[in-house]
Length: 364
Image (cartoon, rainbow, N blue to C red; front, side, top):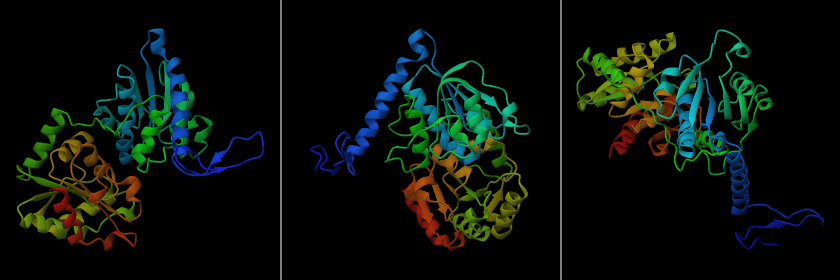
């Protein structure tokens, strides 16, 4: 039998069972209706109905790129409840990034050197707590909070599901950012499109300008990141050097960034050695705030599936993403899938010419 609204097929079950539609928009419409009913019921229980400010707790600790991709969760909550308070439980290594999100009102710091079970409980009551990470360390924060409702990212590991109810992502949410936002939607968050709310402070910008001035860079520049925590996500330093040489010949200076880890410094130095005067290195010399400002002021960013690439997308800067080990449809710089190159056989197979062509396309 066919459904009259979307012409999908219905499976006839024995008497007493409702028909099941196998495919089509009816399934999606049903999911939206169920979520809408749950959200309406949740709104009726909110603190604002008792004259109190609505409060949300977000638990997302690491890593850098994942924290960036989670920022729109706070934005969706603010869109749904403009006067709400958003509290973020963060890893101290990445808290400076969360501090620079306009949608977050308060940051609570974890203590990575001790067991998560001994971390301080978030103070006060919350209308909802959201585990956007799906690990034990993030889930225990939600579990120990005094929240009326506890929801979490659908991919839960390490017994995280014991502490919150997983939120099934919308069928249209292919990108991980949209899947995170779906968690916010489950408690009344609103987002037609993900908003990051990230920006550098004036102090950050002054710091970045002083670093650039040390190398005589005053005009346009490109940011290149040859580093990553995973070797399979790194484009060869020699390829970065060749790209930098081409850009330098066109009058554009290139700045290499990276963390203080030995592998990061080694990759950055290898690119500088191969690139000569075409590249300057600020690897290990920037804090998170200065990094945000440096990317905010660049002409474009080139890197793999790593934190700075997602920062560039969050700041609406052209982000050329180089992918091999991960799926760019799920983790590309948000809204910039067309700026990505994907080579499943390995990062070394991505040619410099192809990257240069993507840069030209992104700057049109």
